Image (cartoon, rainbow, N blue to C red):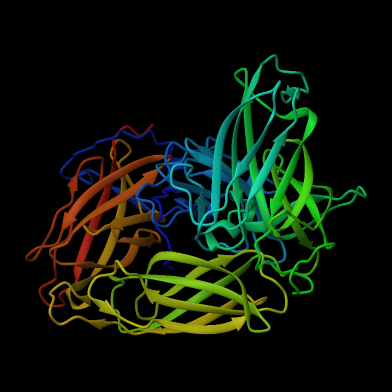
Length: 559
């Protein structure tokens, strides 16, 4: 099954062969001397996690990221190599479930991915696996150097003897304001509760509003609480619909600050359009809303108290609360038993697009009483006739109506389309049928008709063992306009679409390392120009006009 987003190469079968990779192999015929070909997929549910910039206008991708895996299903999650040393290749992480995993709707495998990287706000993302099919997830990270709409950030150094009120001001996309007051003489403490001997503290405070999709969906786990600890001592899980939240980090004396001798006073203004998610009425003075903190390391939410809504001198609604320790802090209603959790939506496309060579996006919106409550956009995927695409949506509210709209993005050349749309019941795992027609621009030559069908045959060749493997892998194609195409290769086979005369970069990733090659189909054939280990040929069948492509991944030093 094809998936939505950019993906990754996963020869998990190679673990049982005990392979050691040699990079940069340029052998002309890696299969020469290979006597045995096997299909041996020993792992289950291949999963791609793509880390992207939450700002859709950013020209960069997250890199130098580190991840850890936690949660109830962590022991069933492995790397492509079958280990536990999880590595991100660029912005991509590929994992698999072990042989003992048998995920179902009633007994899913759940785990949490914690990610951090330079100039990005660390966050957590929960994955719920309910079947053996391959799946993809896109995790948006806040770039401190290119904040998305609805997000504000301030970095300050404060003299502790004097104290300071740090303000995150309103912006054109974020009407909310945050104020964090550090009282004069406050002492800061490390994670062990010991006072840090310092005269000043450096703060980075990121405020997320509720008026944009990018900000609202940035709450850890997109608002799903896997572990929620209530003030009465009970523990449960649930879903948060936040009225705004803060991510506060401080350092002092070369150490991370965890707590304070005097709690910080926080004032968080509310978006004027924010409604009480339970009553659907505008928030007003005197309303109460719970205050929560989130421990990223433990993936736990804790109820800290209740904020009573008031007005500031400018007439804005505000919530006041105290912060005794550092974490993510939010004022939010928590829905226990009032949502239907994560849901899988399969988009079945009826289209005149043959081989998925134009770029589309999908937006899922949930509405109640005719009002759109929240939405999420899934960008940069392909559509083709008869193809099925899978997206997974979190914090789906009960009693809502879902609507999905598929349309070409502005960077998709030479296509005009109003896209297609369809409504569905929010709490169902559903198949949504969407018709998308693409009208090609006659004045250009770069159109859908230039796309050719490519029958892909993928082989991983272990030369020293005289064995080749027909693996289940992920493969990414990027053309010279930076449009991406995902290929899901099952036991060495896949059908993809490529355009003649267009240079494609093919990228495969194994155990956190990228392998790539370039190919352009001209005339009646093409060959991969390999720089990091991919080889192959793309001859065109003169009778059918189709390309019967062979891609070979050579492995020299098999043990």
